[in-house]
Length: 519
Image (cartoon, rainbow, N blue to C red; front, side, top):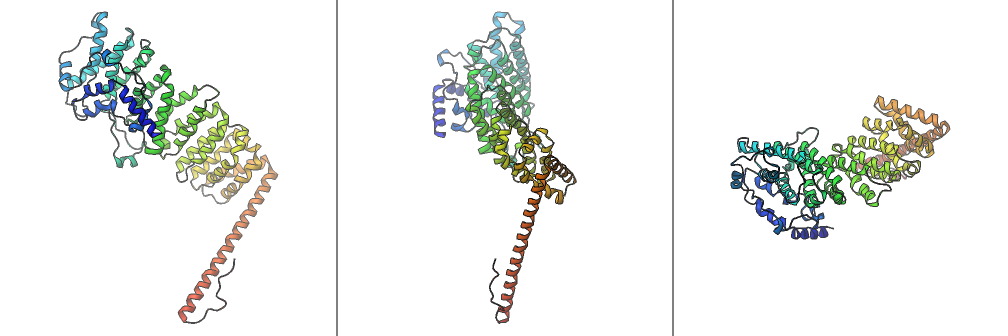
């Protein structure tokens, strides 16, 4: 698989004439610390090199042949000073025939990035760029005319120069200790400009003046991959814009839909099996929740594999609470569309069930209840034994929230109906846990809920409950007898060892035959 993707990447780099040209344009830019990284961003694949999502793009990029390209300005300090030397007139002040040319000049002006870590650097230029970006957004909203091929190229030049940049990585010691609930995220210092650039991109994508047939040559697979890279930004404001923009791209460019789903799959695979750290999983799942909601029935095999291979393994990472709400919605959407998937979903939940993380167990129980509400009796019968063995273990958990949440399952009328239909199988699996809680659990709330559930079973089928209770008592008595016998055997072993040690110390003989007791 890796070799295949690597070969595809090589093909892409050779088949895209704009790649080397744009790299040449961006060499030598030095508008502040980190500016070199900023401008090399579009061609810096942060998602795994040759095996990253960019490899999936193949040679499907929409680059314009070199002989058809018009000149784009080099992003150098000298060119920046020249561009910002004299102010450009406002778009509303020029004749209609000159607006598009001025629009392109303003796009070139806004392609330059500035260092926002130094508030005293390029103050005038930063404000000029901000005002110009706002004017560009208004121009796109005004519907002043169709964006042709050349203008689309200039638009993408401005967008990629601003957006596709190296993100601030977490330090190695921060990756282990970072907690979304407790730590403040690192906000993007260039957000005063980036916010307007994202707004421009959003308006450009949704504008009726944007011809999808023309724009898809530039908003191509390579663009989508680098857009997905930005979802790892720590700034929640940026991820929120990205979520909206990618969803709009998915809706407008139907040709890119399979690739977008495949690229998101790859982000999930790398997160689960390699890094276990990504800031944008919740936002990507929100997009997928809307996409899954629009899947046609019957579901394609590709979509079922996506559920089993990409979504269900997302229950494994320890940072599950950060995105569990969105993940649970996606999973229940699948089961709602095809109830036959409930069997595979429940078994996957049991496979990834946490052993030492009580918070995750509570989340799993909540998701399990939502899935069971959509489960038909036939699928319930297939999974009832492994399911209620796990629920039985949760009932006796010493963590009161886990035990309490598992007992709350019997507050759901539909689940109670399913259990009542299969009580001869379910009751023997859980009665031991119920009896144990009624006698030994330390938490009063759990004790009270246990008595309620026990009373419910007695009302459903009293004779069956009594038989199961008696059998449970017999098993418990047998277990206590076995424990007593083992204790006696170990006491006999210890006594024989003590006699042997005393005899050896006294130089005498061991009384009796000196043999260890038989079992």
